[in-house]
View (spheres, rainbow, N blue to C red):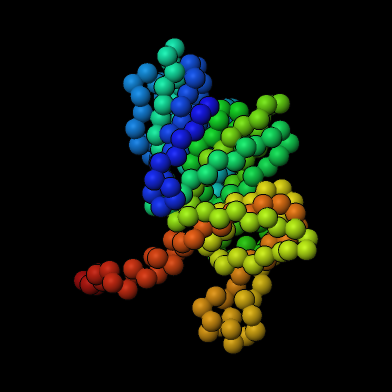
Length: 236
């Protein structure tokens, strides 16, 4: 599968060029345009059977993802499909090897190759103090071949290498994804005065060995800026 990116990093459009018979699974609503010789089939995002139904329900109810996924398959002449996230921002590709996991925040998943599966992972009690949500979305390969996952952000994406000697802190709402080997906790951004009046509150402390991706914009922060300007409904 050959991937092209246009208009990076602010309004990224991703195009997957498919070989004959090749498929890609796409989040509903992400498709922008496609060639004519493509078939589309809608199925549960968690896979087939009872197990797939339960995984799809978990992804939808607690993971913030769609219950369904659309699978685009190229015909005998191949084809292409272009897609984009709902919020303006960047898209990146992660090459997923067998036995490897990629963890994403709610809303970051956009598409994957046909051999990639997703489920949810509970963050634990620390999620109570974090605005990142109670569950991560976990992507992994089904089978012995490599897969690809395509994840998106609000704003541009930055990759950071985390080592035991170089842990990092990330503001709530800016974490997008991370690889195996990364652990995190929730902590105040500074002393009591800084945490209350500094505008940062609680932050995420990420440590271990692996890669972390952050986004340059925060959708919740934008919503908080807009809400005061929205017209108020008058009580009857």
